Length: 437
Image (cartoon, rainbow, N blue to C red; front, side, top):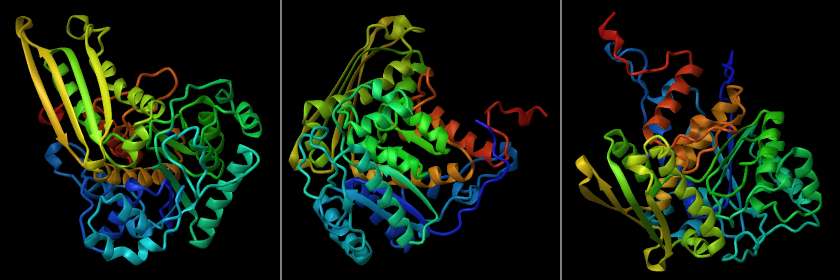
């Protein structure tokens, strides 16, 4: 990654485009609207509430990230998006039932002004939903052009010179890369031929990248995680990131697993189950969509534990993940983990974790942070896969051939060191050498 000589300032409105105006998107939008009016705190947002240490501890420099990095202001954000239903953002938020009506009513006028554009949607990729507000076109190439025109129109109508996009829609069925994903030319031919390997999310991503719009994938879909998308992003100098927001259970795994490994404690089994009742839970009740989520959720432990390096501790680890759709729970999902571990002389122990969390409450600040950081990356001249944003994802994208980093604290260190490097500060190594100068 080449260090930028200059970082363009964040002047003017920033369009934040969200495919999927459901629970996550409307919670994020309403939260930003409340926070920028001083009616609530943006808790969970690293960009708004986090600090960053600069230099030795003896200097005592720890500014807020928002004061250190030239990010766009929340007041500059202009939201838009697409959805398979016609409900405006206020109606959709009421339906999602995440935020209390007393909060939504405070920003009702602003929320009602956000009306979704017709979505690119094919039920072959999300089988449990039946959209009524969808685009029609003879080819997938035509759908790309329709999304590109949507982007241009939204930016024109809102006087935006810059835009970012964050996928907040449902999990698609599991797809493996095929020949159509190998190059830009192959993908363009596939769009014209309506290739079945090109899912709806890929059409959004392709349109955004061609419009120069940074794109983050908040679901485990094969959306920008293939060679043709990487090539297109380099060609158009667009930052991309993904995939699958790291919110509840996997957030806990990437905290607990590094702790066990740090103390060289062995693990024989890790059983995880989730119950949730929102639209995401309904979609994941389909085996095809669950497969996408399962692959995403299973990847962290092996990469953290490295059984190839520590066979006595992790070679025989049995890891199982389950997700159950349970409508009464709504957005307040429960992630339950049972961990069978062993310590000194092989004596067994157990750990139980029951995380009663709120899925969209945890995801909303991620949407905000990714929008602001991707806009910053574009202005700093960064493009292609933004591995420094792995902190936000269950299944982080990396340069080809590299294993992803899943340890949450290593991810955070990488993110902050990238910000230090971009802003001309020294990376923090935690060597403590200030005491030996």
